Length: 377
Image (cartoon, rainbow, N blue to C red):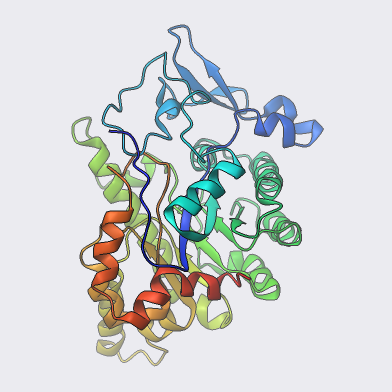
């Protein structure tokens, strides 16, 4: 079954985390001249399968035709093949701004915050700070151009923690060019966790520019699990999905445990595409731990309500209860369109989700919170 377009019945709804499929030649066109020979490219192996080339080397993770499935939301056959090519398999609205606006009209979405697809794949395999930042700059210039001309398509800048100074400069440039916020991946090749003071310059820049920063899942190093478990071949997809959520949670906890939110009381920090129902239990445990050790600091729940936000999936059953207990001002939802790890249109699930929320809360979760946090017009 292909992706089914349905109309959502509530006006003012905002997609907090939609995706685009970047054109394959983006980095060849948008990289500065001296980096062009090292551009991200889509190539074809001897058996006819597409793979991603990163800094002139074949990717170890994005290979064997997997790129052709990145826009397969709603499809039943997710088997890669030489015949299924990335550029030929882009669904409606995935790489054309006019089509995306048309899709939003049909589904009754007011705004869509846009995140990359290929941009989620490469940093796991690239440790060069200079090239990583160059890849980010190229994408950010392209997504700003993609969204230009419509205030309903919202570009979000990609940054790297491998170069904090450079990312702070790039954030200032990207915001001036139209980006409304930024995101970083949930790991760090420097092995410095997100809330560490080593990243304070970036957080200070976010505060000065009045834009939020979010942690968005990407491909992550399997080596992060070294000493805990080996990656099994059987059931690998479920294992990776659970591990990814766990490291996103660890990154978020560091903003509390290292005092980052207290150092930057105007910083807005978000977590995307890792579910939201779990956050209540995490905050409960942190508050209980602080109380048991008589730690005299603001409670984790208070800090979360003041400065954090989280985006979940429409099919979550626990999230509506979590929202009413943790605080309605911190939650939002996302389509993740057009990525294939969702079985069908989001509309039916979000109708059920929204039906469990009180009227005032529903308006905030469906769109009001995103508009406020990202300062949308």
